[in-house]
Image 1 (cartoon, rainbow, N blue to C red):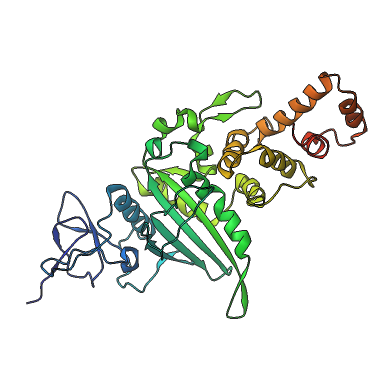
Image 2: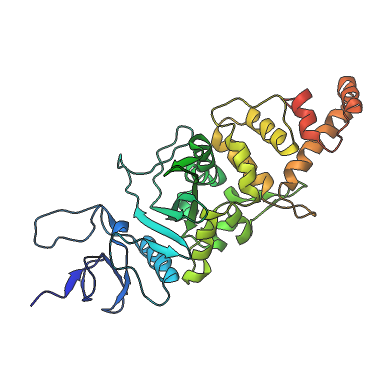
Length: 356
């Protein structure tokens, strides 16, 4: 009689007759199948080949990684009608999702880098195919303890690699053609903090600034704008936001897209609008791409009274103009008097005082 059990990812054996060779995620307190995970997520093979003398790797998922996979699949399949073949994608509405584990320090794995940092290998690749809108999203998600694992806060290379590097890469790749049809190809990521919201928001490295240059802890919504979510107890409390961030861009993403254009390049001497000019000024002053991105996070996340992000950025440039005028600099006064767009101090500074 065939063996109806197979080793799961976490060290024991479970009874689950309809596994069709798929890895299992099981309850820690019972002997019942909780999730039949797509076979592709665990390539290279993770199941322990007991008694075979074969060493398999890279090893079992940790608790946070296991929870993410379970939460994603149970959210997509609340009736537990999971796909039961390794070649079958997950389904999210009309989209198909291919979930892959991204193996660290493997030359074939997806990796990102900023400045002279170590290579960053996100834990999971989430490839989302939207055939109806001819859009492919090469997404990645990384459950991480950010209270201790992101020492530099907004300037941490894993954070910068998630927020802005994907925009740079997408710009470099551009549109793709599949079967003679143009497709949009996007790279987007999300960090899933396994540190608590309360524990992370009070850390100085993640504070943000209001128009008066007073620091504040970000709200959960502002962290989400910055592509940092929190691994909640229930799947439905964070998995929908993971999928949304991978497939939709927000107001802050539009700023980061502009900033990504300056990666590896010199900032222009003139810009068409205030945001571009402000970013050009920041780029000229920043020592590294991480410093550049961190300054954007600090000054753009908090909205002003008008509800628009970037309140501190706008006020900062106004204050710089006022200081020039108060310094009795005759040239500055003359240039400002001739400047017709008084509501665009960033463009004025970039064009006339780029090192301010």
